[in-house]
Length: 474
Ligand code: FAD
Ligand code: MLT
Ligand code: ZN
Figure (cartoon, rainbow, N blue to C red):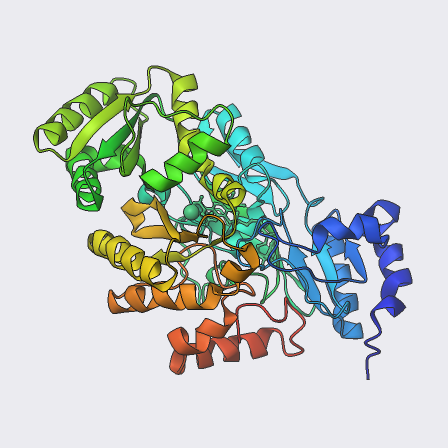
């Protein structure tokens, strides 16, 4: 019988990892024990910080032999508590932060081989230095890691053009729950050789093994861009505008994001340097980001022409087109600061949901009305990736309400949104994953054959249940 007393393995961990690779002091461990949203506070007897795939494998083998549960962690930006250990103190947090080399970049293959701990922004920068584009982009890109974005199959702002993290991955290297290293770092566009193990690990949120490196797809860099910030008449007008741009040149629409007047008000009042680039406030806004590898794409002219048509159709009521890159980045901040601005305004409940694109206006309207009825004075803040049908149907507490009393209603709020989403054929988790927050919804939404198959896969790969226990599967 393996001895499951975690501290028993501390000496062996220290021998594998060396002094820089193992944290045991409470003050050093503390930042790894809670999540960005401060929903959870866990415990761990140590944080392992291996510096190579081999060290990850040695740690996992040791934990497998000793029966010690592992919580994998990348940038710790999970929105669903996925990277936070439980309160038992039995877990080892395994941080991939030091497994962070870019191993190769090939502009002809258009691939980059990056280790799990490479920060997303660093991967974008490395691609740009080589004259290429790694398009995955999200508000947490300064902290989120390649291992994290793949393990959550992150979406973000450019899914509408380039797909989710899964679509940006060709090959994977991982340490499986028994500690074996699987090298699937193939740079191939075509590779039909049995079950696609790499796709099982993507989106598994660390429950099937540890991602240690990946082959990522690169794209030609943009040589012409245009960015517009528009006030639109309502949610239908936002979608009508999406269609106009898509019909004109689908490949140029790099991002198409919706924001409510409430969310933009929060940003302009709480975040320094964020201002409205239009003359008057509106109830609905859209950010359109266009990009093309063709230097002569004339995207600014295209944007002006489409916006002119949309204004004549009374879909767009006002619009600003960025004059330069600095202005474009300033406008992007209005969108990217939404999570931070919501935090500063008070307590909020997030609902990361998706519906078929055509159903977004109905979803926003029905959810907003139902939420206002559920908690009078509460403030719906729908925003996000409308071009993917993925809206963050978030709810801000009523002004003056006790935040704890508001958060005590979290489940009612999520149920209220999910009832509408289900009715419209949507999903209760679009891009953030299940983590710890949504495990209790899995039975209801994915029960029966689907959940049984997931459990069978988990049992086959991780029979001891040591990989991120308490996450994803109820
Ligand atoms: P972590 O938070 O550390 O971990 C996430 C999950 O993956 C956990 O279950 C963890 O155990 C597991 N994991 C991490 N690394 C590994 C690994 N190497 N091997 C196996 N399992 C691993 N998400 C979006 O999809 N779209 C957005 O637009 C978006 N915007 C955000 C904006 C802000 C301000 C913030 C704070 C978060 C946002 N997120 C968004 C959520 C979050 O950034 C993503 O889920 C991201 O993919 C997590 O990466 P990470 O490295 O921080 O992973
Ligand atoms: C974003 O797109 O900014 C995040 O995924 C959403 C959120 O904070 O709810
Ligand atoms: Zn998002």
